[in-house]
Every structure is written in C-alpha cells, then in structure tokens.
Length: 235
Image (cartoon, helix red, strand yellow):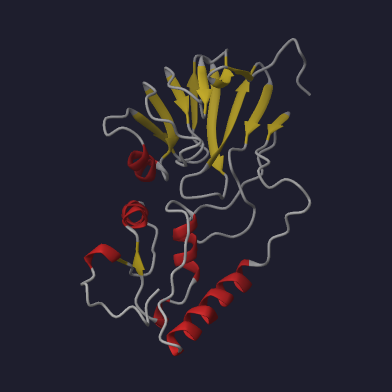
C-alpha cells in the first residue's frame, strides 16, 4: 500500500503526474512527455512535445494527434527507463493498442488501467492482469447497475435485425463510435448478409486498423456510393 511519504503518481492541474520520472499519463493539457493509454480523445490530447504509446496503437493514435507528433512506441511488455522510473505497457482490452501503464520505482509498482474491458474483442489484445501494489482504475461503468448482455447475443440480435430489415426493404443504419466500437461491431456481424457501408470517420479508422494487421470485413466508404444506390439490403 502506498504511503503519503511516497506517492508514485499524483494529480495536478495537468493530470496524473509521475514526479520521479517527470512524465504524465493521459494528461489533460499539453505537456513535455505524455504516456498515452489509448487513442480516444479524452485520453490522447494533441499538443504535447513527446508521446509514448503501444506499437499496436500507433496508427490509430496518429489519426488523432497532430501530423508531426513525436510518438515513441513500445511493444506490450517491453520496458523503458524514464529518468530512472521503469515503464511498461500491458494490454487493456479496450480498443486496438489500448494499454495499462505499469510504473515501477524504488520497489513500488503502480498500474494505471486506462479504459479497459475483460471480455473478448477480436480487434485488440485481451486484458492482462498486472500484479502491483497500487491499481488506479477507470470506473465509467463501475456501478453494479451495469450488467452487459453476452456479446454473442448482441451480435446475433444485430444480424437478425439486419435480415428482417432486408426482408422489408429497409436500410439498416447502426450508430457506433468511430474508433473501437465500430470495428468491434464489424468484426462480430455476419458480412455475408449484404453490403456494408461506413461513415468517413469510421473508414479512416478501418484503414488504420488494416495497417495494424487487424482483419475486418469489407466496408465501403458511404460517400463513394452513387446517388441511386439501393440501400435496402445494406448495413
């Protein structure tokens, strides 16, 4: 248990700060050195001088930051010493490249989870339990009222809904966040049911996923479809 005499990570006006290593984890404002858990906008803020992130997440992170952002990457489990503090990144299971940040100094090990999930996701590495003295967890859905249905049931429901709409001659429009959620849905639906079209923001992220070696079903940019496109069989 950490004591008040040695707090390896502390909050200040810029975010979660490691004074011993002189770096921030997912800072709220631009800083000199930022360790990034994943590429969602509430965790990866543009403007910092140097970034550290996972190799798996580099392509999607570059989509979100300034074009010239200086990004150093680590493979999962690879260690880097930053001013004498040992830092490594471990799978969080949230989206492609998402990481828990393990920080070790003077015999203390702290882990910052970032956003994470323990369920299966075909588009990213699974969550890894990382032994530590102190665990700092995200808790967006931490209340016990949140109980998610099995994802196999959710995908089956989506596929059934799509087929029903096809039978009725209706276009199927599904909303999903452009980074992470959209790719997870694409990986779980039945692509043999019909053509799939995506918003431009999703298309850009799909390309970044493909560049990172993640296989997704074919999905065309909806803006390239002609004005007379028949959407009745499409998702």
